[in-house]
Image (cartoon, rainbow, N blue to C red; front, side, top):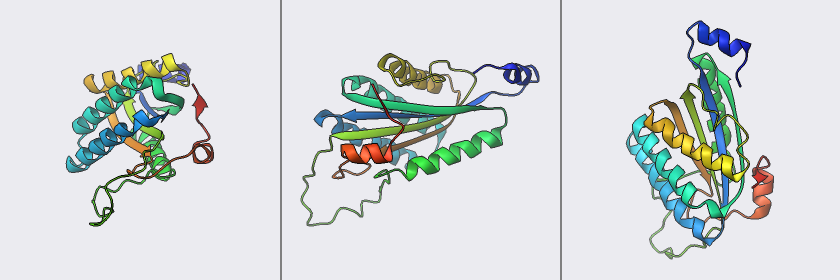
Length: 201
């Protein structure tokens, strides 16, 4: 992603900001527990009022869980852009947030109001789960600024996300996932319709 403009902006002292979004689709009965990890990270982020350190710890936990579940990866995709103005980067983060939040079955409800007293406590187990991670960071990370739609590259990209947290280079973190509720199911047709950018691994 390096260009003449990048070099000029670096020379003039501007900070290089990258905003990227990563999709990971997992399939299999073993992926359902990841929903618990994702929901826990969401609750902690809300309780911490969006504190970047807490969000970063959640991102690390989710990334490490995804790495442990690599045998269940089915498809992936990523997109992003480089910015030299913080406002432009912020606008793109907002755009990706809005898009992720509107994806099929990605709306979370942490109020607990969806569970009624007489409802049975057994849910159908989802066999498909799509995790959407959007981050903004300072500097250059080649492992995230490339096509991540192959297993080795995706592993490197997830490890790079972990490193960014510990290097304190993250400026924004957003996690969305579908289905976001226990009991919701995402079938193959819904994936094709609502996540057309996914590329089989």
